[in-house]
Length: 429
Image (cartoon, rainbow, N blue to C red):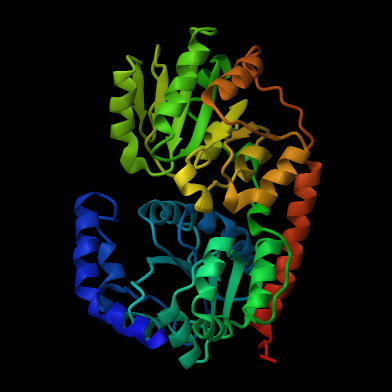
């Protein structure tokens, strides 16, 4: 099966090049750096001679944000490492440019396609000393070639859904071989830990979901729209996906019957959708603004659509109530939910739909502490928001001490395993 995958990925490589070019035309790829994914000549290797390189691969924004506290911890101890971060999505690449520009020893690249010769060239060029894959990023050619070069490999915040586990079980020999090439597993939840054991994986340590560990510095978050937000009655829909737009606009229309001055701020998960969302808002006969970086919210705007990367915290800071997307679309239920922790740590009341498979345990913690609440319909969300917005000022007094304490413990326990992995070779038993 592994041989078939390696041959197949090689044979379809020309088609994948065409696909990346098409995505570039559709503005779904970085217009300047998309060739990093498909050509060895564009790997743009910049590495100090004989330095130790630690490579983290995080597919998208959520995974990128989850590993940054770990990299900061490793940096803070003057370990003199260099760090390579690879991601897959255009949005995560843009965020990485913002977040790492002040660090001389952290670089970002897009992950090459999982074609054996591309991955082989990538490893030979960068020569990483350790590799961390994040969440469910299991790429057979990468894993096999890393093993060929004897590069220790870890899967952190490892996540296997029941659906993906059952898919692996269809190829038991292949699954056991792939998972036994890892030197360390840090599962995101107990369900994944159970699945990994059934796949005979080794060196499994459950410390909790690393998306709990993001630190949020309230004082350092600045927003040029502060004055407008403080005096406005508004709610926010964050990380929404296609299929949730009409839901959010129906919520706005329902609230508007009670509060004529209501403003709805929508931050789509993929900003390539902003123009489509703007057109849909106009069909609802709503006064809409695309808010670019540096823009002020204009008077009499009802729908404000965020059109920039890495700014969610700037609006969470002033939002009283937030709906977190990718949670009402039934067809996405097996890969549903977005990370609510930044909104929680910035003292927002959080609402989500019934489908949050990727963050079940985190939402259970938030719901237990009355920070999050599940809703099933736009009428239900509207009713809750009308109650919240009776007083437009942000006066939530949720006790976040339990969340902060859990986050610190998760980071501490995770770093113990990661330091052991980096500084002491983990021998397979």
